[in-house]
Length: 214
Image 1: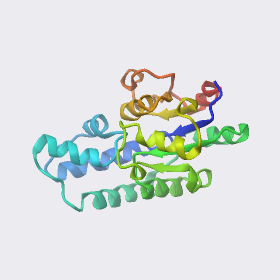
Image 2: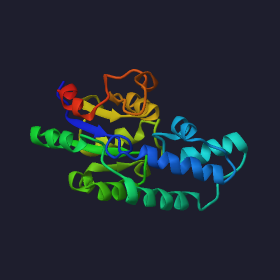
Image 3: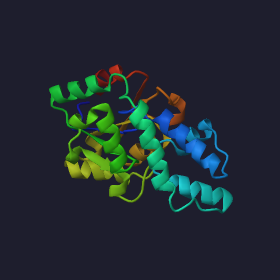
Image 4: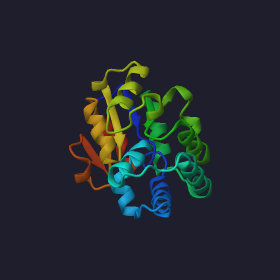
């Protein structure tokens, strides 16, 4: 099927940020008295907006995270990004092929606009994503697994959901894409295919994606 829009998740799909951000998150939550391993962080928070962390901690412990949590976490994550962040291997070649074929694409991320832009600036992906191709959960208020973000990206791009393909690497993101009525292509570099649920196709190397998309 030839799609009218390819929607990329950001963390773990465009930028190789999940190991960095989840290491930072697990350490910070543990520091605050909420023991969390790296594996816990991947399982509970990967692909979700930051409010999911607040909601989960409150539900489990009855305690609220500090008011400065978001700002402090972003400061730590951005420092790690500045030192180590790289684009996902092969993704620039994928974007080049989409551009060459005239296939529109965008990014729809649970992260903030600031986080998306910072990561793209560090990795050089900013030249591939002008402002009108960047969508954040900040734009809709509810992050994944709600479908709102993907539906917003499709609407803003003037494309019906059924003509969209979503590239995701998290169970929360795949669930959101299915709820939006879009085809899901599961990137399994960090997440087992079975954990993503039903997808149109799964792939372990980014170089495989263009042929899957047709």
